[in-house]
Length: 562
Image 1 (spheres, rainbow, N blue to C red):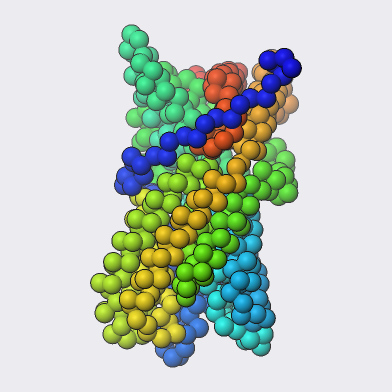
Image 2 (cartoon, rainbow, N blue to C red):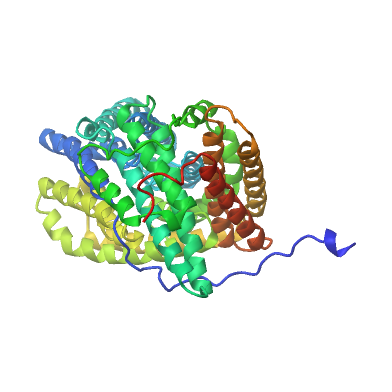
């Protein structure tokens, strides 16, 4: 066999990182939105049940209430649809769990069903990119429901409670639109402007030095990739809004300015971009800028909206290895917990489900964060338990406080959020009656360690050999999009909106390539990532984007020069 036909050898196992895993970062710019939303969505049903003396039913209302955590980054038209699907998905998972619990009390069967549900939830959440918080909330609720004794006659009433709380969560999620109807699009546009300004500043600094260091050059490439991702996200936000109102048109023109900065950083005034971004943070009018050209109608937006998204089945295919990891890891974690005699094996199952990220390296990091956060959270529960045990009202208020704290901290680092999630989960088990804190704490510690250890072993055992294929497919997609854009650039008169749509399609393909390459780089035991090909494709793709911008006459706009 010739050398050229030899299959690439797998890369060796990479070192698992420890440095930086627990580093605290900046909070999300909208951390307070899910934090406040979940307090309102959970608080009203729980306080109502408290007044009725039926706090034992709170687990079912929590199923619907926690849906308020989702879709805060989406424009309100898209958020309405996404939240509706989240509520329906939650109700479907709870229905399966409750019916199963009513038909069998076999812990072996319940763990198996919980593992399959967690795998399905992981695949669907990743395919639809719903999140944060992704599948872990679904897994938590459905797994807990599996181990709650039921009869078939009780299931409809419990589902009705979950549906009513889900409807309330939908209203809570949509309510801010009454005050700031274009808030999500404004934030996405502001992020794009800030990311473009950061790239322009770094580009000028790098070009000013006589000989840029490899570190500086790599930093510039990362800044460009981050800028391209932010611009792409802004377009996705704007394209999801439906009718093109005047505020949306003004936002589109600002995103075009961010694209210009990425194409011609030397001719960009970063201060102007950051000033526009600051103006978008409030409730005032959208900053007005001149259209990109006299004929600019951004017709490519309509072309992209008509094109639609890839079918769900096509998006699910590459995720099968991650779903298999989740099913195997959750099942094994639950069974090991059962073998150790732990009374709540679903905690180990949920711990395993929470680990699985895009690759082994990220899964390891999440495992470390989960263990540290849960152990500290158990200590916090020990401190708070006497206060919570003063009465049902104190219990509800403590849970609400931890709901807020989890969302306030989790965007800084996952382990910080887990410090609040852990006592909240422990307190929720006491809605049906106060329990011995020592027993709860012991079960939680054992299940955390078991779930993290067994879950990671399953992730190592189930290799994701499709990661390399996804890179090849992403490279092919970028090359096709680049060639299509290049042909339109060369055309004397491309169709209305054609170059605009092609430019954004190429940008989307480049963003997907970078995400795919990053995911594959952290995977174990697969063929080597074609780093040079990826970098070459990115450079040529971004050059084509810059040429497209210049072809449309966008680089010479007033106000883009320093």
